[in-house]
Each structure stands twice: as structure tokens, then as C-alpha cells.
Image 1: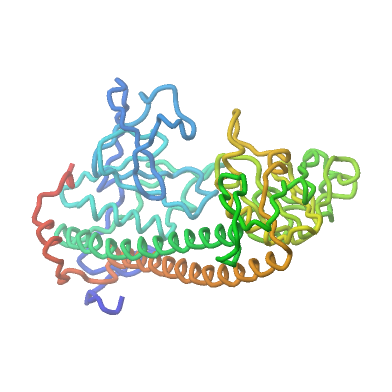
Image 2: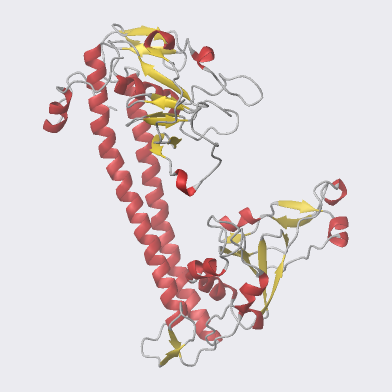
Length: 453
């Protein structure tokens, strides 16, 4: 923030999380600058259903029936462009979500959310949003709610202090932040695109290596498997069941404490599949559970495959690095030594999308041990498997390091964005003399869309 000017005269705000503010800024309670009138969609006339997602107000595709939907939307509240929407429920559960968004269009949204409308002619709605967004990112709301679910209504936050610079300053702050955050967002988007391209390259290289090998001059033959195409003619194409045992897991009775208390035998839930190598148990079961339920101890160096779900878990694979039992949502592939564990792991990575498709059908998309066992996979000679795995391990390590650098840059940019907004709306930097680019300056002369209601 050193490149920006600062105010010369400050006063105490009396607000712990804000500290001193410019001497000429006002401080008003929330009820003094915003109203919370909620008009219901009683006639059902409005059909543009909106939702608060990661701090953005987006359209909700009700045709896809994603999540719980009411029988009608007549109880939803009407939303106008510029309104602020706050989700102030379950504050104890999640301190990472963004809970403040600003509507960019008319529509309807659940009445479980709090709607705020700027009501003062001296309050710019863009600045108002930025201020509450800053409170959101600095986690001001947490600890304010009451009740078992740590929820908060307008009455409980009506005295939340609002910093009120002059209207001209508010508009300047809003324009400044629109411009500066747009630049940061562009840089974040470029980093995300780079990470996406690296993932695509990773997938392409893995797929080529495990299906074509490392010798470009090797004679090829049709594999008989659509996703594989041609493979080197000296490679075998066995079913997974012919080179391994494929078995399902189970969950001992959770109500039987003798199965879980002071357990020493590792047991895994399907969340472990988020890691490439699984070496930490989800929980431990007892010897009693092992002897009196259908669990089986899966040996280390086996592969795990997710079998259930519409999300990414179905078809996801991981290498098991410890002896462990598993739950019923996973299959274990216990190899017989004919194929290298990491070679089969890379093969399953390459065929992820195709493997998922095999699990479609019925009320719930799911794979099973029979389906997994019936899948044919390429099987090069052992020395070729080792060479392919060595090459892929080196490449994936390099790409992973690049990924980490990219994610690190995104984190730094997001932190800078948060700090810049907070510094601007709390008076830690002075942007009154900041010169906007021509496009932003012309925007500042336009009348506000609905800043004053």
C-alpha cells in the first residue's frame, strides 16, 4: 500500500477492527443508512431465481433441480439491481464462505437471506457493498450471531457501525476499487487458465504414455477398446480382474461403540481419494469390528477407486500406502504383481472420464467391483512399465511444482485484493487524487443506477 497516499488527520473510530479513520468521516449505525424491507413474490410473477454463491449473486437454473427447491417461489423476496444480499445463517460452521453479494439484476431470492437497500441520498450503493464486503472478508460477522446455529437477523446487527465518507469520496473509492480489483481479477484469471492448461497437458502426456509407450517407432495394433485406440502390438490387454482382486469395503455399525472406541485398525472413508497417495486413516476400528463385520484389511500398494456419486469422486483413484480397511463407497484393486502399481494408477488417471461413464445408469451413478474388474487395461512388459512410470513421475513432479507456484500467486493476489478493499473503505489510504483511466472517468460522470432509494 506504500504507493498510495494517506490521510493527514485521523480520529478514533471506537471500533476495534477498524481503528482510526479520517477525521472528516462519519460513522452511522446500519439502520441509519440501509433499510431491510422484504417484499414477497406473492403473485409468482417473477421467475428469475437468484442465488448467493461465493460472494456473487448468480442466476439459479431451477430446471436442473440442483439442491432443494420449494413447491413455489411465492415466498421468495423481490430483489432489485444494487440490493445487497447477506447470508447470515450457520455462522459457526463455515468461516471461509463469502456471505455478502450485490445483485446486478432484478429477480427473487430466498427469504432466508437478508436484503439491504441503501436508503440515504448520501450513500453510494457501490461503496456500501465494498464496505460490507470488507467486513465479510475480515470476518466481522462471526461471533455476532446467536442461537444454536449462530444466525443473525437485522435486529441483531442494526447497530453495526458504517463508515460514511463524503459522497464524492465514496464514489471515488468505488471507481478506484472497480478499476484496481478488475486488474487483480484479470491476473487471477490468467493464473487459473495457466493451471488449467498444465492439468490438460498432464492428462494428455499421461494418456499418451500409458497407451502408446515411449517408443514412437513401435508397431501398433488395435486394442479393441475405444478410449485406448491403438497400442504397441507386443502389449497385453488383460481385464483388471485377471491381474488383481477387486473387492468392496464396508462400514462397521456406527452405533456399536465396541467397534470404534479405542480402535487400532485403520479404516478409510472415500474422502481419502482427494490425495494421490493415502497414508493417513480416516478413523480406526477395533479388533472386535474386524472379526465380527464384513470389513477386510486391504494391503498397502493396492489401488483405491471411488464408485459412487455425481461429483468427482466416482472414478477417482489413489494409491494405498498403508494396510487399511475401506468403506463401501470404494473398491480396492489388490494387484498380483503382473502390473506396477503406479503404472495402473496412471492408466486409471488417463481413463478417468471413461471409467465414470461406465458407472452411469439407475437412480444413482455408481460403479461396482464387477464393472471395474471387467475393464481392459494396457499391460507392457515390466521394464517398459518402469520406464514409463519414471518418466511420468518426473514430469508430474515438475508440473505439480508449477501448479503450486500458480496457486501461490493466486493466494497472494487474493490477499492483495482483500487488503486493498479494506484499506480503501476504512480510510487507510487516500484515493481522492487518484486519476482513473479515461473509461473509468467517463463512468464516474454517469448518474448512479439506483444509489439513492
